[in-house]
Length: 92
Image 1 (cartoon, one colour):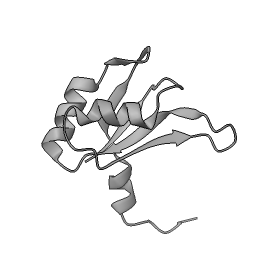
Image 2 (cartoon, rainbow, N blue to C red; image 1 turned 120 degrees about the horizontal axis):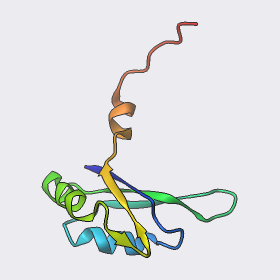
Image 3 (spheres, rainbow, N blue to C red; image 1 turned 135 degrees about the vertical axis):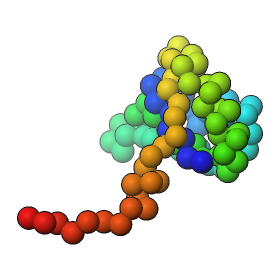
C-alpha cells in the first residue's frame, strides 16, 4: 500500500521516515519529495509498505504524531488509483 505523508519538517530525512515506519513493518520504498531548484524538502513523502495490515497500523499510529516538531499527516495515497484509471479523451 502506498502512503502519503504530509506536513513534514523540512529537515526530516528519508532515513528518519523509513526508521519511523519500519516500526510497523516492512518499508519497500521511501521517497521524500524534493524541490528541484532549491534541493530542499517540499514537506511531503511517499512510503510503500507491501503488507496492507502493516500499512494500516502505520496510518493509525503515526497520523497526527509529532516528528521533528511537526504534526504529520499520514493516509493512503490515492495517486496510484488515479494513474490506473483509463485516461479520458479531451472533449473540447
